[in-house]
Image (cartoon, rainbow, N blue to C red; front, top):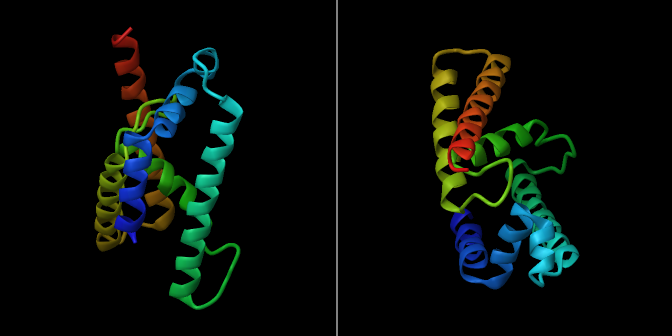
Length: 148
């Protein structure tokens, strides 16, 4: 399923004008608007694609566990953000890729699996994930300041 989503996402983000528009709007929406990009349509497209992917994940989760439960994926937001940040996506916009969050998810899953094997409490694992996000965002800020 990862390949079914990742390959079209890569093509959409890196090989189409709509992907360039998304990066442009994420970087500076006013500059994108002045360049002729329909910012509102691009933002709507981003939300539509995001909700479509979320619905796809909901269907996969419901088929895996056999029931539909609205609170089943509670707390996965932190995992998604952490995977993206670990993979090199900037929380400040216009920097990211498809393969980065995949690698970030693999790294985060490895860390969580190791913590489970070491009998680390689930709450401590969330704290570790949060600290990892803070550290990576700090280094991202340092990198952004250095590039100016």
